[in-house]
Each structure stands twice: as C-alpha cells, then as structure tokens.
Image (cartoon, rainbow, N blue to C red; front, side, top):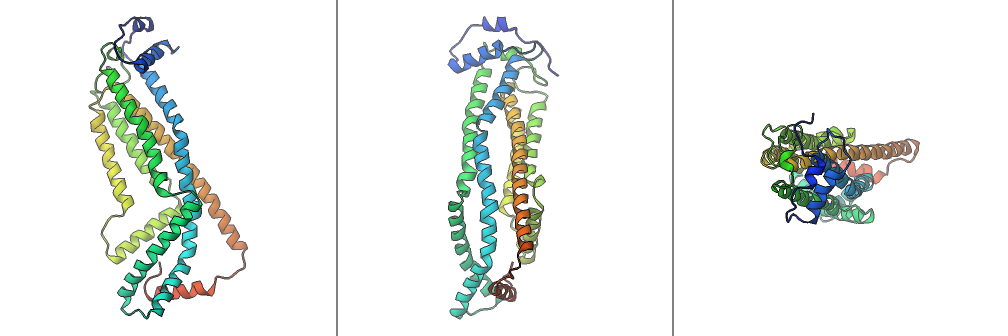
Length: 319
C-alpha cells in the first residue's frame, strides 16, 4: 500500500523553479494540479498514468505489426506449403534430366541447395503481394517503442536528480524516495518477472499445429544428428538473460525510472496476451474454414503430387 509523507500540492508549487525545461516544469505542475485522492502520491500516479497513455499512443504501430504477422501466417505460410510439392517435383525432374549422379546423401544435399532459393523467391513475392515483409514487421514496432522508451527514461532519471523536483519527498510502495534506488529490490524483481512472463507468452499461446510443427522439427534435427539450437530458441534464451540483466539495471536507477519501467512492462505483457489471442483466434478460424472446404471437396489429389511424394520418400527428401 502507499506509505510515507509527500509534499502538499500548494507547497510543491512554491518550490523554486530551476532550469529544468518546459516539459519538466509542466510535468511537475501537472502532477500537483491533478485532483488525485489525498492518499495517492501525485508524482508516482502521474508517472503511471502517463506511461499508460504513452503506450496507448503507440499501440497502433504494434497492432500494425501484429496484423502483418497474421497475414503472413494466414496467406504466405499455407501458400508455401501448398506449392512445395510442385516445386519439389520440378527440381527433381530437372535433376533427373541432368542425369544427376550420386548416392542418397548427394541427392539430398543437391535437392536442398536447389529448392531453397526457389522457395525463398516465392516467399518474397507472396510477402510483397500480401504486404507482410518480415523485416519491417519486426523492426518498426521495436524502433518506435525504443524511440519513446529511451527519452522517457532519460527524462525521469534527469528529473530525479533535481533537488527541487520533490521526488526525494515522495515514497511509493517499496520505494522510500522516487529520487533513489529501490533498496528492497521489490520493483526490480517485479520488472524481471514481468519481462520473463512476456518472453514465455509466445509458448503459452502457441496453437496445436505450431506445437506439432516444433515437435516434428526437433525430431528431424535429432534424427540428422544436428545439435545446433534453432534461432527461435537462441533468441528465447537471450531474452531470458535480458530479464535477469533488467533486474540488475533496475536496482541501480531511481525509483521514478523503475516505476516507469515496471508500468510499461506490465502494459506490454497485457498487450502481448491480447495480440496473441487475436492471432490465435483468426488463425483458428482460417483453419476451420479450410478444413470445412476440404471435407466438402470431392476433387482427388493430383497424381503429380503423389508421384513427387514417392520420389521424395525414395531419396529421403520428403518432409
């Protein structure tokens, strides 16, 4: 619960104004002018509300990235799966015409080297068609968030060093002062836990098909004797490490900054949950529609695809 003494609003306004800048002065004046209940610490409350409003302001960019990712999974991935047998047939036919010589491993290696650039080319074309190129989808939301996160952190850290900001006279939960570090480590640990939960959310909201795909990929790697970690797992391990690093860094910054960080992380966690729910709901709807259309269809599979599967199985190439 909130505790300790904080300056009255009238007294806070009478503090001498230093060369803090217009934004800093406006923030301090706003915090003391807003009609909060008497038991609410004004600066901490304003930091929390301001953080939520900032995150809501950049939420459209996150939704834009989420929509592009959904389009990629709805249109690009199924199209690539559907065209793969036909592309495999074309590549194998070309290898047969060339009278390629070699054992199973040589066939397998040559086939893999030839089919990858073809599929990559189709993937690029599909991404352009459906406006879901992966690089902008991944980078732009992160850049926008950093563009807000870094200046806001610097602003609060700078304000906390101002002896006339009254940050040293306000406490909040485990923080004795907003201008000093959290000696109890309550907020830094909370930040690390929320960050870790955000990292693990990608696993919590995986669909049954995604879990099965990961299981199949892992089984194939073990069958081939590959011991290298996939990129996804490497990134996940790195983000888990970031969670620990954030605890260490948060224990060294002022209370005002760590309140901002924890509030932003909690907002990001709920944002991730909501976006993963949107993604899973839309993908499940698409899968149900496709399953229904397949059941209603009486058209048999093309013979060319069956022949391709036989060839792939013969050369240990069929996935």
